[in-house]
Length: 196
Image (cartoon, rainbow, N blue to C red; front, side, top):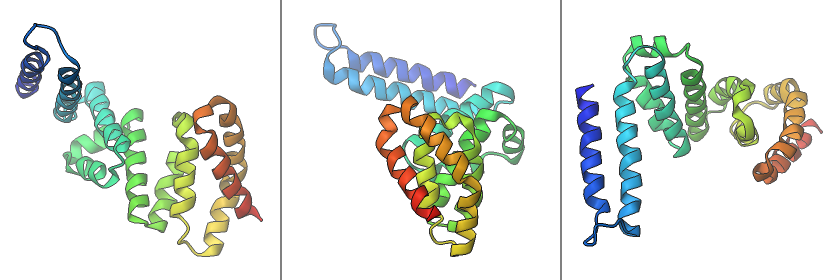
């Protein structure tokens, strides 16, 4: 914890120094590094907090994995997860937020590796999680694209299992998620083509 406090204090001091100009006012060029510095410092602190038991550790793990997901770094995120002590991983795997982001980062890693068999396995819990909200179409598209290497019969079986639920979910998301409308339309078309 002392290291976290030192990191946060150093970040605050550096941010203050960067934001001050000759007139004592913050200028636009100093504001950008301050924001970046603050988020990096918070992320670094969360990497240490991930070792804490309970909700604090789980929230920190979820935050760090979400950042890897946001950056599209499935390999790095999963490697970071695997570097955590086994006791921490097993304790946090049952926390819903940590499990949600761990599942998503594993699926992203499998998709980036173009590992169709692993995608078929790791994508299922991601697609089943209601917390995806407007990301559902993006993750479903990833699932459709990364399972393309499966044998045709196996792939058809997977799509038969999820098609009805997926189409209903995409229809509901079409009105709820206007920013994802293009992705929703594309994924719906892919699912319909798979069925024919």
